[in-house]
Image 1 (cartoon, rainbow, N blue to C red):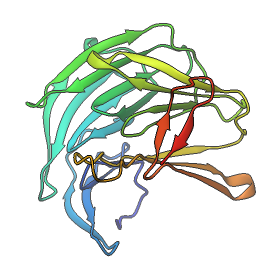
Image 2 (cartoon, rainbow, N blue to C red):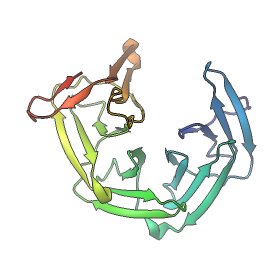
Image 3 (cartoon, helix red, strand yellow):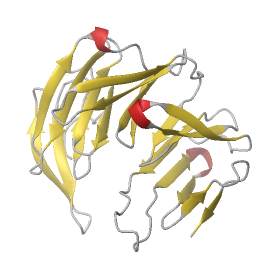
Image 4 (tube, rainbow, N blue to C red):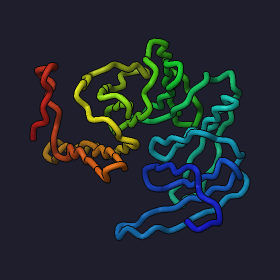
Length: 239
């Protein structure tokens, strides 16, 4: 998306991309067609500057300002038009460094002090706070949410944890990995919808881990596989 200065944020909804510059408040929506062509749909110069985190679920977006703790909900329609739905005061949430989405739930997290909180956006676009997790440990620099699960990872430690959201925004850890390789600076998760017809294969997400110092890019592709957790100590992927 051409412009003079760089976009600071890119958020992906189900069908569109939102580009945003936190310094100027400029924004643009775009779409990628079936051939991989990127088309800019709308441009905006009236967004408030200062949003530090943007996450999306389906066509809804949640904006967060870490300096002021302000929140906003928004949506992008089928034509790529963006509109803000509601703005919330700082008293609506706490102080966070990270905002991600998984399933239909947003997760706030504080990398420095630990702790987290979950929230959702309802059918009318209202922000709905759900749960607080004071015991969530600090130090997770990379968090990614797939369609079903969450991965917590710190590049400086060879440890990672997976978890999942339950009803009403509750969270639980699933597995810890003490032999995870260090140095991954980015974790990306592709959210793929599970098909509703049982005769069709189950689609699970793809997780990309990137370590730039040795140009290593590891892709964990769980497509057409399911996680067999009958032995929780030794989970395996099965067809």
